[in-house]
Length: 386
Image (cartoon, rainbow, N blue to C red; front, top):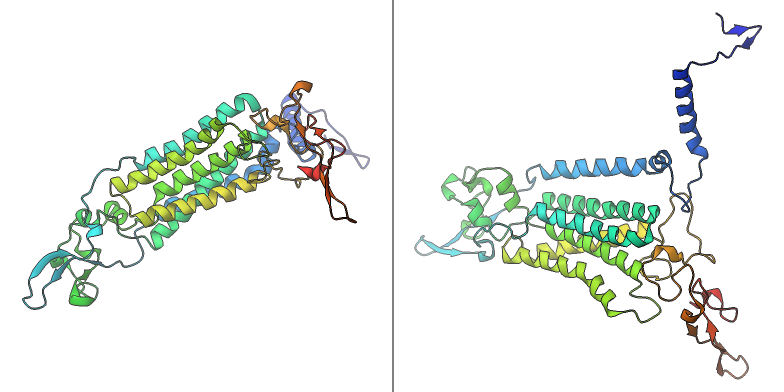
């Protein structure tokens, strides 16, 4: 039957299967009209619509980092063997760089364990905090920012390690050099007294163990663990309000410093097992810290401003500070107004604003004012008083 009669289209009643497909398509198209609000949990389709670019970027960055990690070092690296006595021509046996002659030891904390600790411990703390907060957007922004910090810092250090690298403290034992294997005299037995060689004289053979021994800078262990530790440090500070406008409890400071202590212990273990030089560890830690700060600020309203550093940011709208910007439901502590409702007996009394007399230049203090449920001062103290 012709669907067009008299110039008009005849609408047939779809079958049950077609009706289901139409409804599904209409629901998908309706996502563009669904508001993206921080006030409620979005549907999976809306969340995917605003997050798909991040997911794609994560996959691309991860694939690039993994591909670079699997490549051999592109640059030529020279290293010394032993000093040859210029008068007798005999080998003195003195290693020029003894800091690379340490014995090889298995790592106290392996790479996979370092990654597991860097991922599971922050997620465990997040789950504990969410028992009380129960915010989809807080969990969403935490996890996305956490991935930002770990993946970008890891890709950054992998690229530097591949292009620059450096010798590990146990390089000589891994390499097991034999000068008789030097095939290119223009690259081997060069430099002062001709004791600089390349990896061509390593008897271990070209492969991942040798490449890894020549890619010590910067430390991937310290990059990963420091990125995770500093990120959870900033998150705990925001939720516990350790650095705020009141004297917080000491247990908060202790809990806040635990991730930093754990990161310091992991980094310190790299010197005990001679996996890295101190400057490798320092460079990796700096990379992790920088990306942790950057990632946290991307997903939360502030880093140090105690009034807003616990508020997750919206993707589609700018954060505007108004009367409700404290968001007491997104913090873990009850102090100084961070609770939806507080008894009158718990309200704290703060001194009034200090004013300056323009005529006399003297200063006078206002009357004490009470803090309301939102944590802001009363009428005699403006919104910017805190």
